[in-house]
Length: 387
Ligand SMILES: NC(=O)c1ccc[n+]([C@@H]2O[C@H](COP(=O)([O-])OP(=O)(O)OC[C@H]3O[C@@H](n4cnc5c(N)ncnc54)[C@H](O)[C@@H]3O)[C@@H](O)[C@H]2O)c1
Ligand SMILES: [Fe+2]
Image 1: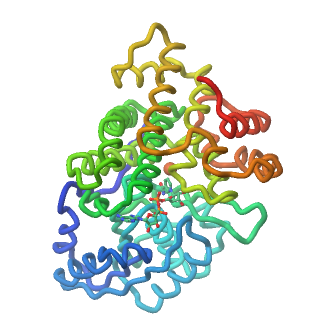
Image 2: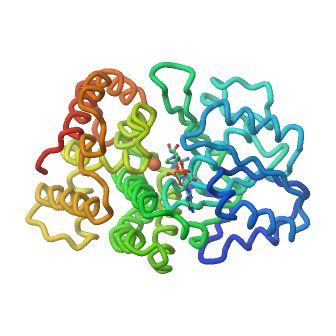
Image 3: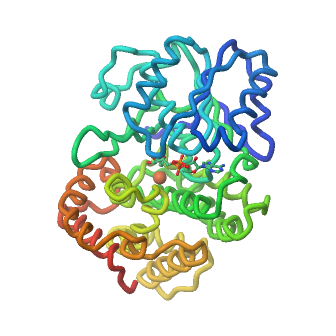
């Protein structure tokens, strides 16, 4: 039996955040970050909810790559306020933090272990709305939340993966992403591309997932350079925001692969933004995986109208196209070029590889990696290689 699970209600397109004006309910707890507050998006959400007759309280202290402590702090405030809606607005960080808070709001005494291993039934106290402001994680549509554990060494990113935390309503309004600066546009856009490519080659992907992923890949190649070059290009912004949503809908069903396993550790160890970390690993993982799924990469290359002789050549042309895209949006090709000190990288290599091989995203990768493979991939991604 196969399944396809996404939020019950998906609202998207320019101005779609106004959908909030028509929801029923009494109290909404808004979860966001300081930037969203400063650019006025938290107030916009508050105004819309107030027009729906809903009382609001906001928590705007979510940091990038949110920690367990942030989740616990927000959940405590929820317990006092008793909302019937949780409304997350932001990139993946506020949305994921809010998903974690939701679990602790409904089960104040639950342990973190249980949250990750056996997420309990939610919606006894509240339902969940996710509003995306980056065109990146697709978290508004996914069953995942990435929470960073900074209490252990090395710091680790754990993933809650459960259909329970799939939002009830996903809102993808490109107008809210228009304020992203070029660097955030570039990094988060590469996250979309990575989701779609890892979905397309996942061992768990169905034809439904792959249809969404393939279209998202085409949209990224067409519109990411335009959204990067001119953030006011409405067509490009809308394409990227919808592609992010589509890739999220796809990978929440198929799961991801080892680009994410490698990237999670680059994020926690060196503070490289999630999308940029994915971008650094993507070309080299494609080469590594091509032994198992060159025909899938050839299908992607075909959808991008790349000219190639055979599947091997298609893999090389796809990698070349990704390297060109990186260049067009100002992203580095290698970990070294992203400014990570060589000595620090070398001394961290064992820890990086060990954490990467333990990462949950390994399971759906089309080729099973060894610890040594992870080490090799980090090294290749550090120095780069000709495709
Ligand atoms: N849940 C999932 O399915 C999933 C999938 C992939 C990644 N993630 C996780 O999501 C997190 C990354 O999320 P992200 O890449 O969206 O970044 P983010 O939420 O960390 O935001 C990055 C920066 O961009 C700013 N920003 C966001 N929207 C903006 C806007 N419209 N205008 C101006 N600035 C804006 C934020 O304030 C922040 O400073 C990571 O922790 C990653 O592991 C989750
Ligand atoms: Fe991602």
